[in-house]
Length: 466
Ligand code: NAP
Image (cartoon, rainbow, N blue to C red; front, side):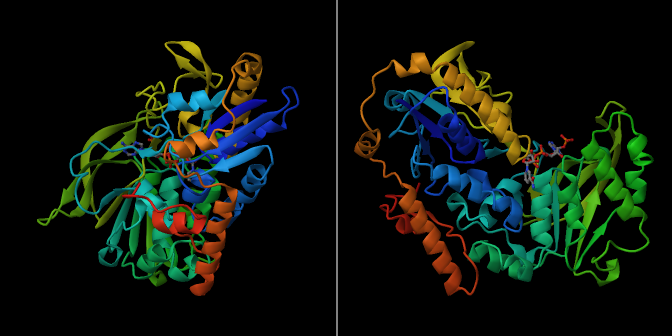
């Protein structure tokens, strides 16, 4: 039997586990999927926006994998800490596949990032997704009239949309009650989503962009003069070499800018309760504060395309007033103690998923997902990525299985002071979330704190917080 630990129960981890048990070349592979959190599914539970029910429903597929009898979920197990260092894990399993994602947000590196009211989009996403490390976050929403979201990827679109949506639309989702309550009394009327490059370089996907034009009571505004700075804007279909998604994005933006009427279902600008302004060719240079140390505006420099896909500054500046600024400029991988790390790329060096130590494949150590290739792609991108890693591992199976291991690693983990949450514990969390939702007159509602999650899972409470 080949015993494998997969660290991380997000899509890349679950797809890696599936690939390992469903192949036929190496019989008898058993996989434990470990996660720091007591709940599985990684960014599908704690990243996909609550109003994206269709993407969320992928949890059903991931669940089917984790319920396979050859796979065991062990939540509430932190790898890389004192109780379970990476080296110890390799003593308990023939092989370890790290699928730990890219947990940290990137910074802008401009003055004013420390001002009150300036947050990462990740913190905001974690809060409305009930990530237990984000419990008690406060974005001061009742006091905010104008928000600025910096960046033009799908996360920027997600946080822009959630800020613009009304409580009635979010109530049917599993958004935790404190976040729903805070959004219900939000004072936000204007959200500016600001890209440093042009409409043809937006990183968002077209479906997500289009959705902004369908939000009840929300008007999307664009400045045609700004859009036409992009050479691809005049003729996106003819713009040589523009990938299909970028071409479609430009077409949607053109359609909105040129329409005499707002998009079907959207209110006229004057009737809108909230407005989303999509801004382009503006790069943030400073976050400006008031006398109390809170952000009051973002200072941006007008940029122009440089003809090579980048932009140059023009020396012309503009301020957009904001009491809340969310930087949404991408994620970054975090080094796991004991594992090699490339700080420039924010990933673990690897060859076809085999971890490289000093340029050589390290026996028994593998990576998949964002920690392997960086924070790019949609959920489905993890399938081929996990498949490549699993096939490397299976090619090594002969050498890996030669090593004698102790029996089940679970007693060793418990002896180290860990309290793994197994599948029935997770089902306990699901039941408690359904009961919480019923008590609030909602569907299932997520539990947002560590003690609540652990109690529902039947695990002991944390001694002094995680
Ligand atoms: P992303 O797609 O990499 O977008 C990052 C954005 O930040 C880009 O517009 C980038 O502009 C901008 N940026 C970077 N540094 C900046 C700076 N210093 N100043 C101003 N702007 C800056 O990252 P993401 O939005 O975090 O998404 C991560 C991944 O998750 C993506 O693959 C995304 O598709 C995926 N995701 C998918 C969904 C979905 O399918 N619904 C939802 C959420 C996330 P430049 O292009 O100019 O660098």
